[in-house]
Length: 252
Image (cartoon, rainbow, N blue to C red; front, side, top):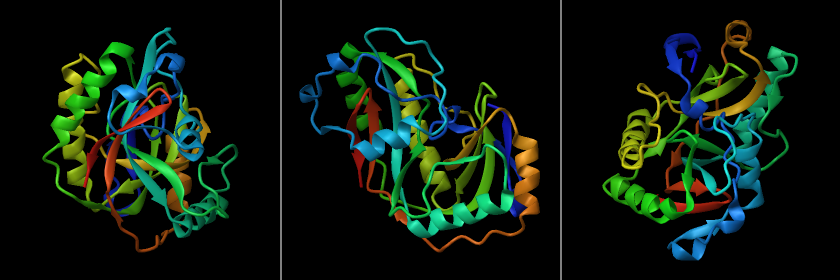
């Protein structure tokens, strides 16, 4: 993942998350007709809005389709308030960047985005139940926490094929990173790729084709200070999406 930069006071290097996971490799089902969710407690079909949020965030599959494999992704659901969506729409208008496509709607109610705790990886059907169990055990001691987003960031996926305008996690950053490391521990038991070494959690609000980081960052900075509404999210659960199904692996 190309290095990214936060705007203003925290203009520091970012390493994009999960290609980056609220931002990159598609989590669509790869052979989902074989999935047997009744085998796991707490499994549920994703609502249409959640499926859309995952599948249409400018993601690029980072592994080939293989029959019997399931794209798997661990994340926190973020119901972005309408006020944040309006702020994003205003910023996009100010930036006026050709091809920069919003992932939020100025007119919608709270919109579901995903804050990634893992990369998107491929697992086989026999691994599903065991992986979900290992994730639940790894996260069992996580205490309830709050997150908020007060800064903008520009990120690029690993392949350099997509650039993203993101909201970076400020409050709750350390807690999210601890969750990421616990997910890593479970993934390592299955020889799955770990997350980035120095993660900076975020959700994406817009994307554009190609590696346009430098130019987008310059345009972001030229747009001037961007105030964001006061808002905190009490994290209620962590989910693992396998194909088109989700499994709750932690609840606060």
